Image (tube, rainbow, N blue to C red; front, side, top):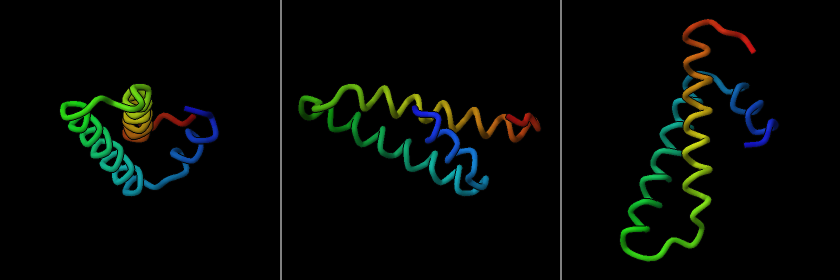
Length: 69
């Protein structure tokens, strides 16, 4: 992920961040389901979505612990 995208995620509220996490998780689930049926068109997309989920969860845990970056 680019630094600009991470800054945008950090600027979101907690509710918006939670909604973004759900959206990315749903998108990943859809892609995995499609991969079972047909050949994936972009394998890197799965990796990028996993990384985005990790970044969102990290931001959420930083907020919960009170760590400012």
